[in-house]
Image (cartoon, rainbow, N blue to C red; front, side, top):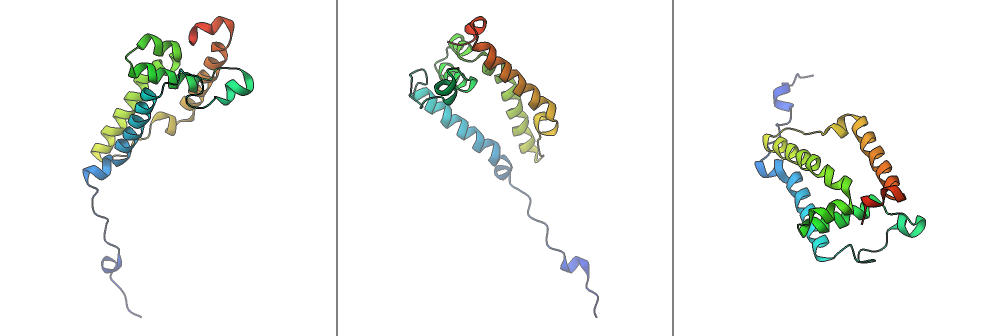
Amino acid sequence: MTATDPALTAPAPPPAATRWQLLRSPLQSLAVIGAATLALHVRDPHASGSWGYCPSKVLFGIDCPGCGGLRAVNDLTHLDLGAAASSNLLFILLLPLIAWTFVRWLRSAWRGERYQPAFVRLPWPSYLLFGVAIVFMIVRNTPQGAWLHS
């Protein structure tokens, strides 16, 4: 039986990632979001059926925040903040948080660090956001909350 030197049998460490490899995920996500935004600019979701029909609208007769979000993005691409807020006020209010999270992710990727937003590390922010979205959806479908959607 012969003793082997662990330094000789250990695999070589992987080469360091290049800057482009580090930024791949955030930049690919940005490209997908940009393509979706362009599609929403070109094909107006305000026109009934232009993107299909919302299951919650067809089955239950209620407006969902997702459809309002699509209309809000279309309004923002036309630089109409008032109409965007009328389409989905919650989405408009969350845009700074979404942008901040993306910038933090991009900065962490640039530095070669792993970024985990709070909603991944801690469950309560996700629960809170989900709860707010549910309450928003219910309120905007009542007569008192009719001002929350166009």
